[in-house]
Image (tube, rainbow, N blue to C red; front, top):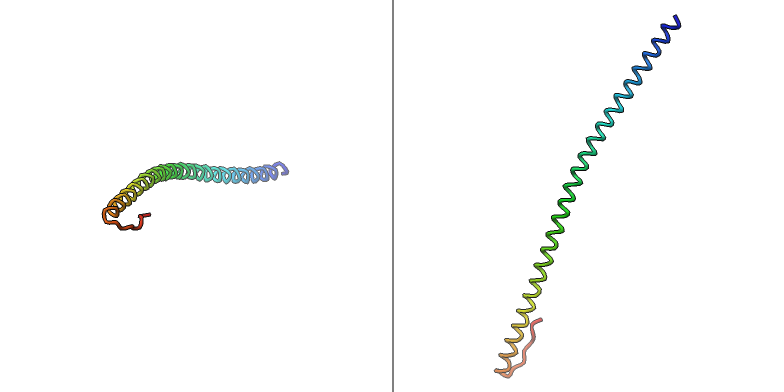
Amino acid sequence: MASDELKIVLEDVKEKFDTVIEAFNMVKETLDRHKEENRKEHEELKDEIVSVKADVVTLRTDVGVLKTDVAEIRKGLNDHRSSTELHDGKKGKKVS
């Protein structure tokens, strides 16, 4: 009789362990799935950052060219104004 009771208890314990193992495996699968999703999101974010950095470099170059162009235009306007004022005998304000 005790042997039958022990078998029932052991079967119950085995079922509980099986349930715990199944739950553990489900949690592991969920974590693995989230890990993969996070890895993909991280890669996408890194790609976007690289793209933004490239845009910033291009923008800096464009701003540098624009500054040079504006400086040349200012110089040209000031030279033209100085030349014109010398002929007219007037003094004007420089473009800044």
